[in-house]
Length: 496
Image (tube, rainbow, N blue to C red; front, side, top):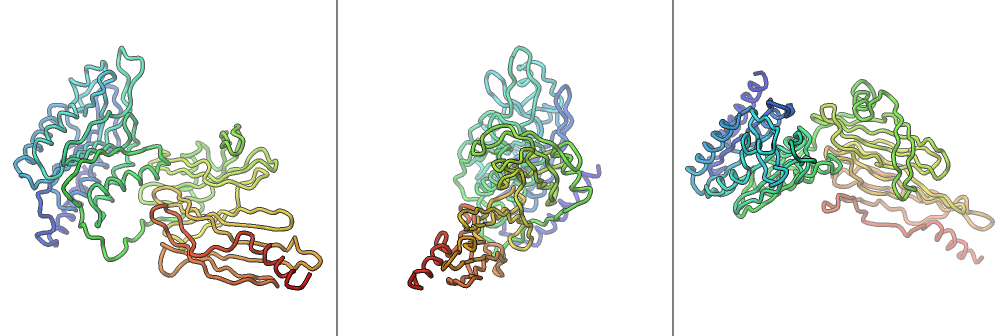
């Protein structure tokens, strides 16, 4: 009851805000149906977060002008009646109607025919034929809504859950099968075909994109698709089939004049939240021994690491844990590593075992942690090379974003030939200092200075975000190993 009252309060506030919008803000009739299925009969698991997921989507729809019908824990008969009543409502609204159906709960596909079904909470699945008895065929629902002739129809199924196997079939099937969209329709699944989705991952991201102004509806789903894939390290890959032909935007189609603020975060360096996140990721407090198969570039063999928590970044309803691992083997060819886990409600939703690597002798890489450089906490992972008296060093810039860790740039920070200077050869040292840009997080600066007797040209280099690649690109790059060239140029200039 408390959850339902909270939702009604949010809905009331959202409607109050809509009263302030111009009457022409939403020209078409916007109708939404949001269904959550939690408490199932038989062996079907309880979908704990279904109600919260549905409330999140319903709030986003209400805030963007939809008249939303909300339903919860429907048996097959009531599920069919609710969908039929809503379909007729859409049909009577005429050709300018926009319909949005969101279903979260259990869905399953037949192990032989591949037909997919939405399941009432009275479903007791023993034999495969029970799917047709307790469920609604998704293709029939699609065809019914297509026949309304609405301007745009969205069918969103957050229903790719684990279901028990069926008698007489050796192997069960996972998730939902492909249901093709009809013209002027978009069908979206919370994860890929024949795959299983985690609870509470897709809905909050989709709700954010529904609210985001300046993008078409199909772009909102595409953005949610990319973000969920990034947040879970591609362990959950939403699927979308888009046949929309009429332009439609949930929020305003015009981009806002002011850049949207980044999602709030809290940096956690110690304490119970960090300890609990580490326990969720590794099953132990404070320190954990883990066997990991090394990547092929490092030999591909099994290696043993001791992991410890480094820090965490707490976002709205989940936490990103970063850990450092020391390799049990400490030869110069054995590298330690830094790993990351994204955790929601105590469950790991994304894992990056090789976020960064050390330079050998079993140790994880050195790094510094910065806030204020980019939008989110950023690791400056140090790496380097030394040979024949020359030292080259760089820092990999890795941002811990709400949608997963993102490699942003590899920045050269040191070129030092001091160890190679002998007799008439004089040393050259070029140092780069990474600094934030006053213009915002779409760029940062590297202040390069020659700090030795031999001088080149000092420069302030700007690294600017390339939206297509997600990496920051410099507007100037020094010649590779420039200090070695300047050192020998200086020698020739002395006539030697």
